[in-house]
Amino acid sequence: MVARGRGNSIPVPASDNGKHFGALLESMDGADVSFTIDDKTFHAHRAVLAARSPVFKAELLGSMAEATMPNITLHEIAPATFRAMLRFMYTDALPADDELGESPTEMVRHLLAAADRYALDRLKLICAQKLWEDVSVDTVAATLSFAEMHSCPELKNKCIWLLCNGGKFQESRVDKGFRSVGATVPFNC
Image (cartoon, rainbow, N blue to C red):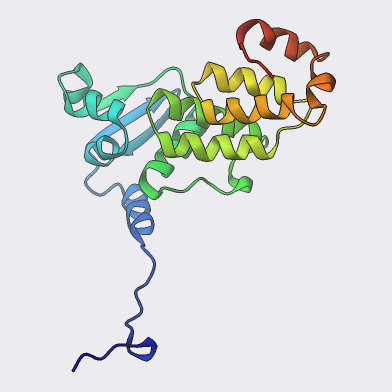
């Protein structure tokens, strides 16, 4: 006889991988690479970074010089942005808004740029969604330009949709930010 039914199910907890990997990042147990940005050093695990990012995989496990370096200096990313990106890579979660600093929208922009650079597609989409939630007639042109610059078609298409629907295009096209976007981002309404 097979026992089936609601009363016979075995509850399975939600995944807690993020909790465990986050603890691994905090403890630095087994860390085998570090990154220096300005005067800050971040310790990490090559295997975790390689598993999450094809760019890190090529750099840290491939034939590039970084594959054998115990410490890598980065220049084109801010320490706070790298910290948030690293935390995402271990936990698959974006920091809460109150952890994003004084200007959460600006930090999300920096994270989207970093996600684009390191091919972290999920982080890129999460950031795009957060930026989309803050888009207004006043910011849509700058956001459209930013989305174009960082190869984010999902955000770009949302901005174009906003510009082309509900009369928003007429309001935004006089904005000086839109004038600069019009020259760089081709679109038809």
